[in-house]
Length: 301
Image 1: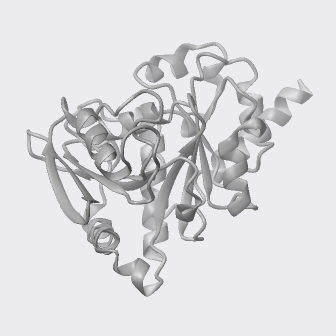
Image 2: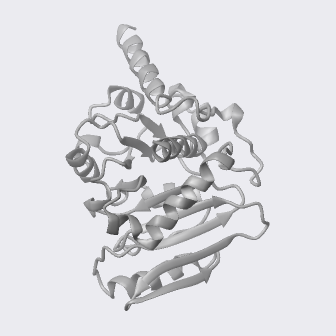
C-alpha cells in the first residue's frame, strides 16, 4: 500500500507539471470535455489571440528572414526512435495519412502547419525549394503521402540522401489543432535553440533511458525543462507503465501524455491498469491541448 501511495503522489505531481506551462491560457481537457463531433476543433480555440502570432512566425520561417537576421523562432520539434509511433501521433493530430516505410519522409525536416479551417473540403499543399526554385504543390488527403515522397526525392535525391532543406506541409482542415511542428530525425540544429520545445515520442514497450531520441534531447536540454514526452503503444506494455511515467527516470520537465490512437477512449476508460492513469495525461485531445498551450506560451514570450 505504501508503494502504491508513493506512485500516486508522483503521478499527481506529473499531472500537475503538465498544467504548469501557463494555466491562464486554456484549461487542460478531460475526456468529459472532449467534443465527439469531428467538425469541432480537437482543442478549444483561442485562435483570435494566437493565430495572428503563429501566422507571423510561420511567415518569417517561410521567408527565412529569421535565420538571416540570427533570430531564433519558437518551434515544436518532434523526435522519436524508429518504430516509436511518431508517424501515428502526427497523423492523429493532423487527421491525414503520412508516408510509411524505411525513412521515406524523414530524410528532410517536415514542417507541419495545421490550421483549423471551417470549410467542408480540406486544403492541403506543400511548399519547398528544389533545384533553386520555390515550389508549391497542391494535394489532397488521399494523395498527400505520395506528394511528400515525391517532394522529398526532389529535395534530397533518391536513395537514402538527407537534406537540411525543409519541406512544409500546410493542412487547413476542420477540426485540427492550430499548431506548427517540425518532424525530423537527428538534425539537431532545430532542437538546439532554447526557443524550441521538444516533443519526444517514446514507445511504452522499451526502456525510455535506452532511446536514442532521449539521448539526443538530453544533450541540448539537460534539465528537461523544454521536453514533453508522448508515450505510444500503451496497450502493448501496460504493466508498470503507470510507475514508469510517475518515476520519470529520464527527466521530462513538461510531463508525459499517454496515447493509443483510434481506440484510446475505451482503452483508458476500461483497461484494468491503464484506467488508473490520471485522465489529465492521456489521449490525443489532451496532447493537442498541451501542444497548443505550450506553443502559445513560447510565442507570447
